[in-house]
Image 1 (spheres, protein in one colour):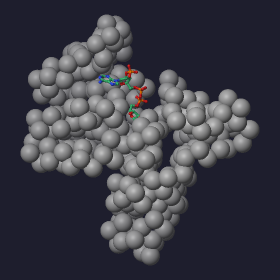
Image 2 (cartoon, protein in one colour; image 1 turned 45 degrees about the vertical axis):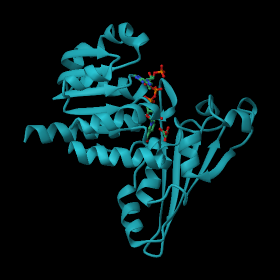
Image 3 (tube, helix red, strand yellow; image 1 turned 60 degrees about the vertical axis):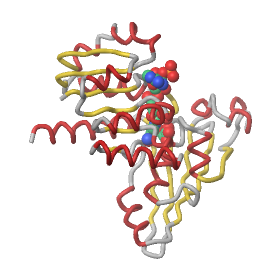
Image 4 (cartoon, protein in one colour; image 1 turned 135 degrees about the vertical axis):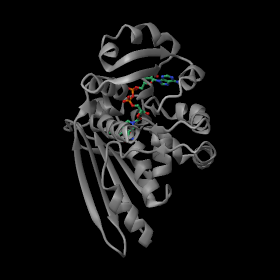
Length: 269
Ligand SMILES: NC(=O)C1=CN([C@@H]2O[C@H](COP(=O)(O)OP(=O)(O)OC[C@H]3O[C@@H](n4cnc5c(N)ncnc54)[C@H](OP(=O)(O)O)[C@@H]3O)[C@@H](O)[C@H]2O)C=CC1
Ligand SMILES: O=C([O-])CC(=O)C(=O)O
């Protein structure tokens, strides 16, 4: 298998660490130009693949015709490179699912997937329960309320800094209560799960999102309630944060790894 990663942060590194025990034939990693040397020097690469290359150029990544491309970089990368990757016939896992809150981009990705006969794969990421939510959404009139609770440091560098004093919180504080569309736009590194729920529910505007900073939180909690005439359920997930990125639940990388395993099995058939 030839695997390509775009982004080598908490998720990319976790995937490469897993590859040490399940190496691929070829690995291509796309990083920013300033990070090429440091990434090439990472000893984890030698164990992850028989051959590894690091580039800052999407053309170079695509030239190698990887069997699977994984975006684990950010929403801007999905917008900049997602359509061209799919049009070229390369299957693409998108982790920064919040990018799909942009209707125009969502349509372009769908059209590119069809034109290139390539699969756009949206992994569950940090949450679960999407199968039942999709089922209830088909039956109609589904209402979703999601609550994302993280420790104050996970909200650094976001608009939450202007909405509450993250350094002096004494109790759980809800600083955002609005649609999944606005959550994905305003909190691109924290509200991808809200976008994933919205896609399964069939509406970014009717999926309600509450974002909470909790000084006593030790990890990232995702809870949501689904109500519909056909059925209702609630889910509560407590996740450990990634060691090198408090915003990202460690489970997310393993959700991507499931997709890598699925692709590898399909190639072996
Ligand atoms: N679907 C889900 O459930 C979840 C999705 N996510 C999303 O997954 C993505 C990755 O998460 P995570 O690994 O924790 O994030 P990190 O910030 O740890 O890593 C992302 C890496 O991608 C790099 N990057 C950004 N733009 C480019 C580019 N144009 N070319 C190459 N590299 C680039 C960043 O570099 P630099 O730091 O220089 O910008 C950084 O090194 C994020 O968008 C995050 O919000 C996270 C958790 C759950
Ligand atoms: O990993 C998480 O806890 C969720 C997250 O950051 C996101 O949805 O963007």
